[in-house]
Length: 161
Image (cartoon, rainbow, N blue to C red; front, top):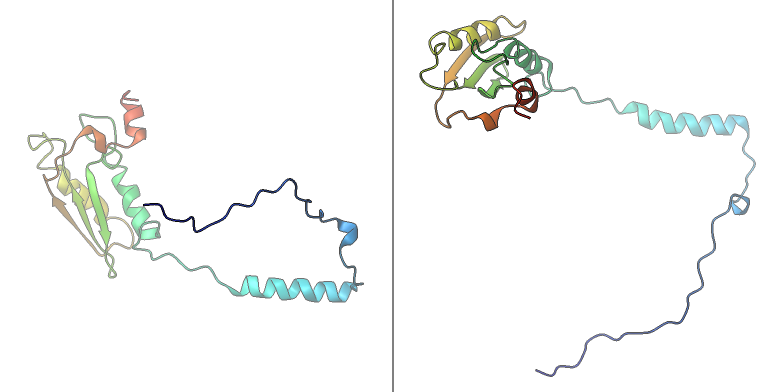
């Protein structure tokens, strides 16, 4: 397995550094104030011609989506002084193109005292958000809720941080 090297190493004692750029060395072309204005305007025209893309109202960060999340943050678990969104009980918020909202959620335990009333309250609060056509709540038990699903704000509120 004695193969010849396919590269060579060249040792160098010193290298002259490249010259530093200096303002005095820059080429100076006299530019009239009119030319300067035209140059700036040309630059800004291209910059300002591009309009920012609007967020889809139903996508995360969109107005309707954020309004629904805001409504969910107003619902508190009666046994824990934290809203259900930060508690991690909301697994998903889906807003379709026709402004229908589907909320997938769970509860801390199937034997939770609000197991019968909480999904109804979530549906009422979400359907009352301006712009929402209708709301549907899917209550799921898989994956089961655990404290790891809580936000940092909820952990701080409960003294778990």
